Image (tube, rainbow, N blue to C red; front, top):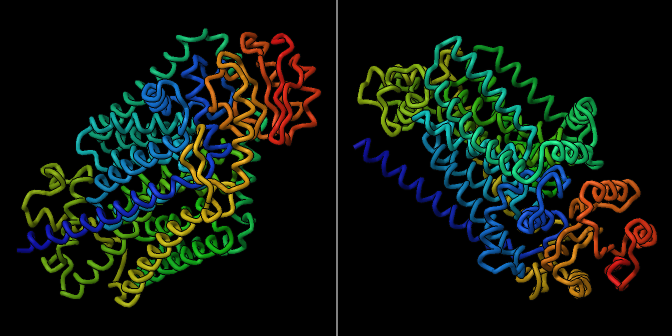
Length: 630
């Protein structure tokens, strides 16, 4: 009867998740229609698009983020095959592809992590699904890294067989393509496995690591094989030097470390953050040092309160999607430090830590500071939510066990025994775990009770917990989940990248790469005017784009003659790099040059430097023609 009740409850939880998943899908499908695919979003598509035109990464594209284009290339190839090379509506189509990838990620995360906590796994996965870096629904190096790293960690967390390390390795390799600094995560993983082998001879961990290595190695071999089949090693190294000296991504390790410390103690516009950090650190120290369960619970409750204050502060101060993803990671850290529960430890080591390593890596490779760190913390957020629910569940079950006179009696409850069963599956050196199948251990009461003793935090504390504190923690957790979900949904719906609000997106574009998207009225003239001007360029010609509107290269079948479609500002150093680009790639010399109106002061310099003359002047920009095209 208890087993039937448990199954029914789990079915209800799965049903609730399914309803949330449907709501998420509808939300994303509605939201993807709003906001012009501005500079960043359209730029992400220009790299795989130029690859389909025959350009080679590193040789013809010099932006540091270009490696992520390998992941976009299959989608671009399928899209152009279906449309026969036509780019009309390409922005909206790739938003729909992003939605599909996001929904698949949510399902994978839920089904991998639900053995720890179905409610926690469902909420954590849905929080990731709602979020989009900077509010852009695009397959970018930011969004794909979050998806792939979260999936890779979830696969490793629930791997019953070492071969699961192969898809996990492929996912982690994809994340490294999006953020090359993440290779440090593989090094950390290798060292951890080596230490585990030396201490406990963990054969399964070593076998899983070898499959992860195989997945990473296959990906690396495919990428290097593709590159070196299209250029020699010497040319690759020369181009790599220019890619690594990108002026927008300067700054050594020391400077980045100083910036990181400054973001903690002198946050960007949010005076609450230093106090939150101070409270959390003190609470963790007190909770970790004390052996009294009541003190530990009180310390943990304080960290939840601090997280609530932090979350409310970022909602009030920033109202920006990125900053919502960091606050809940703090109480998860506190849970690990204070209670040292084995289930939490596994989630923390294989989920939370990789997420935070990614946050640090993106900080060292990006110029977006707290925007980038908070966005990357999304990976850790998923596992943080699961950690928090596991923590509260086990505190409640331990309290119930003490109330009944013995925490090992059957009255601990179905949830407590489910936790014990899950722990038996994931623990490496548990006899009961070796006989587990599909997440359920053999029906051996003694073995299950032994596992339950390990899963509960009683071994690190004295006395019983306070029921009022534990119930208060549970209420705080519910409040935090409601605020997190509400703020994400509200801010994501209203926020449009580089625009005032979704309510200002009232005009629907009907032609070109932005077809089907609702935009602000002032964007219509810009879009239609620039698109009509560049339509005069013959299809086979090469164009140098000096524009903030990165969707322009997607308006036709032209060859991209720019070192990158990304051009945040025209200045002398940028033109010097472009000249160096033509020295390495003389076949890319432009037939036409487009300059945004905002860069009009540089028209004369560009004409002299690239031997071209003014062909047409419009409100949107200046189209110049090579003197050789007369």
